Length: 287
Image 1 (cartoon, rainbow, N blue to C red):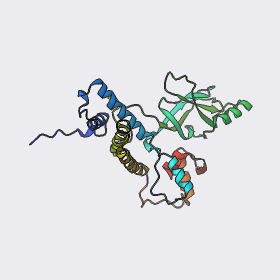
Image 2 (cartoon, helix red, strand yellow):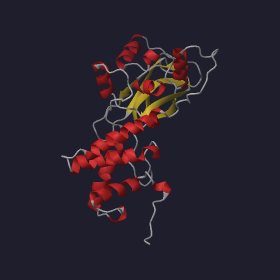
Image 3 (tube, one colour):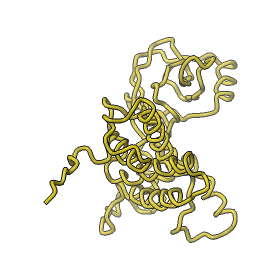
Image 4 (cartoon, one colour):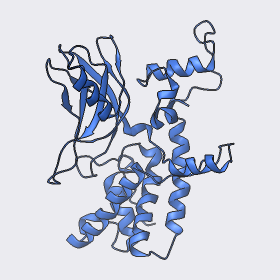
């Protein structure tokens, strides 16, 4: 009986696993170590694009949405899913007299309000034009009350970086916490696993197959259809992350209405209590 060489469990869903699976489908074999330089570049390019397509996925219409009006359908189709695992937490330290702070290199969008760790206040994110108008009329100092995110000036020598502008200008050293959408780095030997975990491994692979199909067999749509099916399943799984069990009960003295419950959850997660001010990320996670 032929010996079966099983893939090590820890490799499932990894960069090497994706290279093997995609390489096999392209006819260059299942052993990345045996690929020529051009073959490895070809397979790696497809894998990296497939992973990024999964992270920032195309919009899908929700099958379980009861509102079938034309406007509702259009809105659903225009809004891609925002993965919970891309919503990560970070912080920076304020310096007296400094109003602008560089955000992480993998920053691709702020999620909700910023929070002063001294417990004094939250810092809502507003349009930069509004914040600049306020700063021009009143050059105040103290605990920041508003924040604006803007792209740093660049001429394309490197990836786009972002910064946050605060008003009033801080007058003390205090930590600020915030959540942001991370733009993950390319997969490689040092970071071999896509974000999201093995629950989404088959969806990531399907995304890679869809990219390969687009490039190698543009007249076919089979892989693209499979990716859409897998994407819908992964979105369903992601929306259930952190969702309380159906039998969970709440203290009626502490939470007396649904709107109050949503507000408390929003406050706890750093988006504030006002549901009308929540962005799309907050709405997807909380509601």
